[in-house]
Length: 337
Picture 1 (cartoon, rainbow, N blue to C red):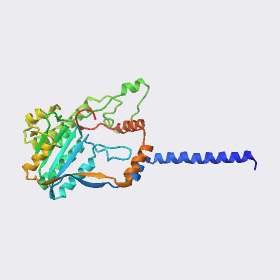
Picture 2 (picture 1 turned 90 degrees about the vertical axis):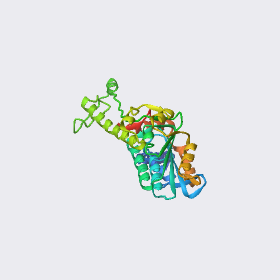
Picture 3 (picture 1 turned 30 degrees about the vertical axis):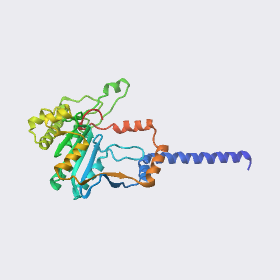
Picture 4 (picture 1 turned 45 degrees about the horizontal axis):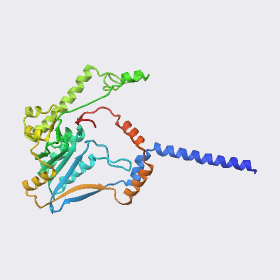
């Protein structure tokens, strides 16, 4: 076989290997590579741990819980992305407290602009269940912000502490949609819709909302708003009329919230913990918090591989834009998410 034929065979072999490699890469990405790889390097199970914040009696303990960030169920931290608030983990903590007889008090630290109606209600219901079944005190410490859904989850507490400059209040419901029909038409994009009923594409970004649909949406908002008002009235032992005086969406400083009856005292987290200890004879109680960790080599390997092969800043931004394109939903939320 002459040199030209050998060269041709070698080139053909290289092209075959290259083609197989490209197809394999496409197959990996089509199979949700990032998601599967997270599971591989981080492990499938999180190790739930307890960390002692203040030593004390282990048979008489205070659980410290923290809500930091927007109250939305966006999953747990992965190799590629960290989340500031893990909704399912908080619900798991509340479940643990329900059955842990050594826990005799809860300090809930809230630093949140609020979030989803569903997620806020889930936290509220679990806190209420703990109060009813365990009959242990719940004290809330508001950080820089505890607005809208952040206030909603604070309402059932036995005592609420806020700092003088805490932003709170924002009692109400919001639902937003965007209409880019005019922009689409300007650039020559035509949107075709096939629907089973008149209102199936209600709040579509490609058409105006009709007066009838606007009334439907307002009815939903009003119903959810009334539920919020009822939660506050019950938790704060206030009349509905008094709640509605400040339940128009306005934000309040901690000082103004105290004057309005929405909080009990001005003080920081340390003052909140000290008050709970004193009020319920828990001076010697251990103070602990829950945490989770993938542990061991998985964390190290995940961090290293994530930094080497994880998506770039531009890719992360594109993924966020695509992920954020969702149907409008009702929110207990103050400000921009």
